Image (cartoon, rainbow, N blue to C red; front, side, top):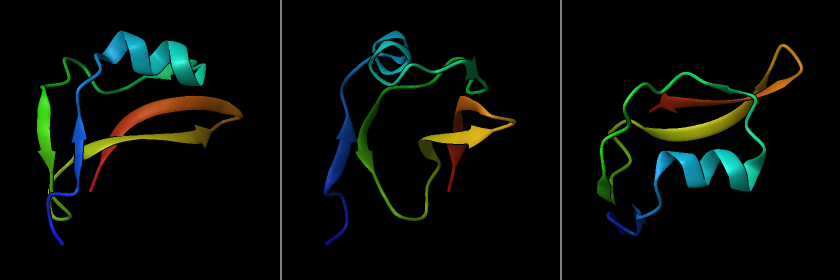
Length: 56
């Protein structure tokens, strides 16, 4: 069941939708397919702020 996920929204849309305070992703590439063993954007709480970062 790989490749169930994709990201078709831009970085700015993600920041606005989730109220991200800090963006650590840099220039995020388009992700038409997100696989379990590849980097993907994640929103997490770090230092009491919402942070957008790339994780595996």
